[in-house]
Length: 163
Image (cartoon, rainbow, N blue to C red; front, side, top):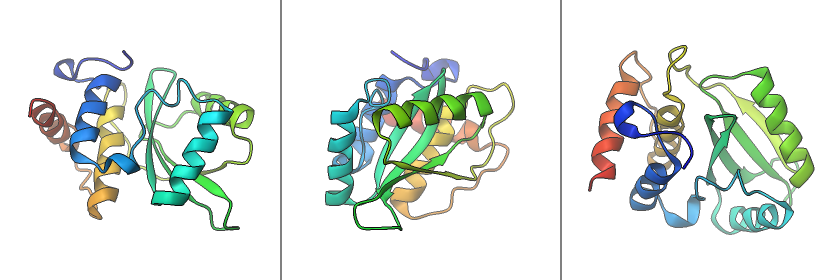
């Protein structure tokens, strides 16, 4: 298990997978442990999934931190795949490790950093912010990232995990 227990304010890969499977289109989400086990073969499968289904939600867990990844067709040519990265607590160390990992297993992937609202400093809310990105994109809505957004998302995701 990666992450932590939602009751303690953290989000685990197991809890997130249950929620995503129930509330997001299965063809557009990959399991939360995909990044941990990503290799060249799996990268090719993900590229094919993007070409079949469009945007694919890619939960990234690296260095005990969740980051929202949206895999989609690139803008440069029809074969290009890009990963839009929305990180609520960006760090040069994490970004460097992420880039190095993708360069090893998926060198053709184009990484695009996009602004993400920031989580409270020293909080464990990265999984909540990642989930807000996925649900906002799926529902085609703008998530209000007010000061109590994490608290609201925690309650919603906890309730969703119990249904």
